[in-house]
Image (cartoon, rainbow, N blue to C red):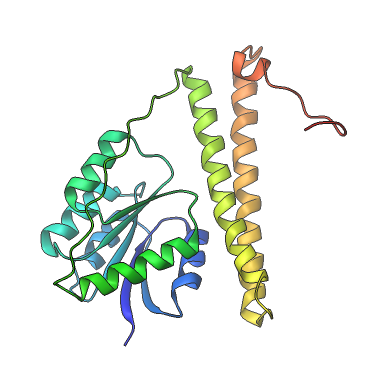
Length: 228
């Protein structure tokens, strides 16, 4: 019998990718916001929960706190693109089994899900205690530059996730009819993310007028030929 995995993620494209990765070995239920994540997470049918940090309505910290209060032994995997040391410490204190920074390797995620569901069904097995990461130094950037930098990292991470998924689909010996619609949807989501990112950058530059930021001014302009 397949184990039950609850996937709490607000990005529909990322949910689609992870569902495709997990569906052969697990029954996957989904929630796209923190409120639904708590509601479904309180069910005693979940063998494991995969949880995004940044969620609408309630964030990942609120979700894991509610779920662990009701089901302390259910493994929880946290996904995040941006995590500061305080939030990471809170997730670990609340009982997160694993934290995956985005972008992540889907095969590695599948392997961790396999191991954690097996460990949860074997009470005698000792759960590995996560090692606290080294603190990082936050770059000192102006507010506008910080927002641009965060948006660029978020966009690159989202694109990397979908490219890895597309690679896993196209590496198969044959393409199934259902794969075609999956590839098209992933490509559409990638296009939307790129358009959204550059839309934000354009708005920032226009609003600033004579934008004279060192971050932009010192950036090398791309060329059609030569070293890029």
